[in-house]
Length: 202
Ligand code: AMP
Image 1 (tube, rainbow, N blue to C red):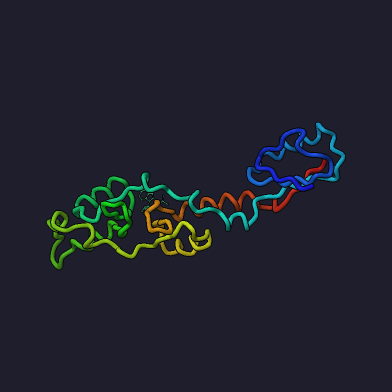
Image 2: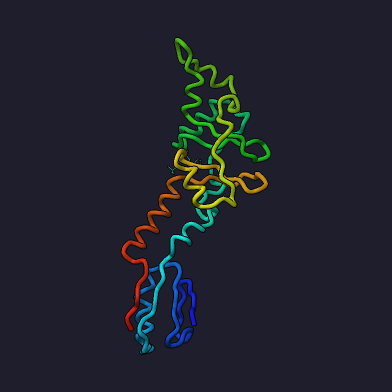
């Protein structure tokens, strides 16, 4: 009999010669070994299966996104000075632009704003109050759909520090940063180093 557990192996929940496959937290290994030894399991071994590459590739990207209510944004009709203020105060180089119905319209960055006020002979600061975000924003930002795969996210984020995330109806969900993807991959790769599978001696 093959039993799958998610970090939750309890005494009495398995029999000798069961193959026990643990998905998830690998740190429970010692606890599990102690439990098996207490039961004097006369088995050749238990196999502990690590999170596989398939598990990683099937990762639900929604678990990695920063939800919209935690993402700084500006509105299409905000003056550039407001957008610049938000960008400088938050320390972000670019943020999403939404419309009043909370739909994603683009991305605006410090570079786009500063570029737009550089005249031939001087910096035209007055443009910061005269012009609106929609005039300078990138209106074709990188967008990832919630039903797209982890691999799609990786590919798209090669060229972008963050991706805007929309559901299948086009409703804005938040952003997925390249650093969140790398953090997840780093965790997986380190955790799996030299431990593709392990055998517990009884
Ligand atoms: P990070 O990987 O955290 O350095 O973020 C990369 C980029 O994603 C930042 O420079 C911002 O452009 C954007 N970003 C990350 N977190 C937020 C947030 N909470 N609100 C708005 N933009 C964000």
